[in-house]
Length: 63
View (cartoon, helix red, strand yellow):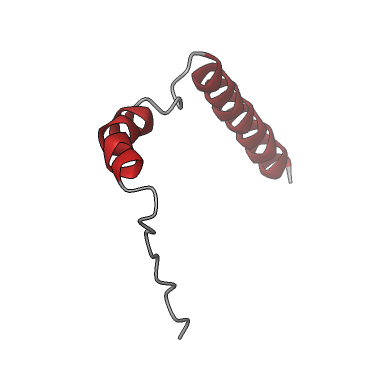
């Protein structure tokens, strides 16, 4: 029974470690999206030239 207490303690320590690493990564900007604004800038002129052009998106049929 004492092994369960040790395993629970170790798993909580590991979970807290991963939570701390995730919070640190978010605060330092690891998950900031730097790619999308640059790509959006490339296609901005096409949308301004043809404002009536509608981009159709097809929905996938569920099986």
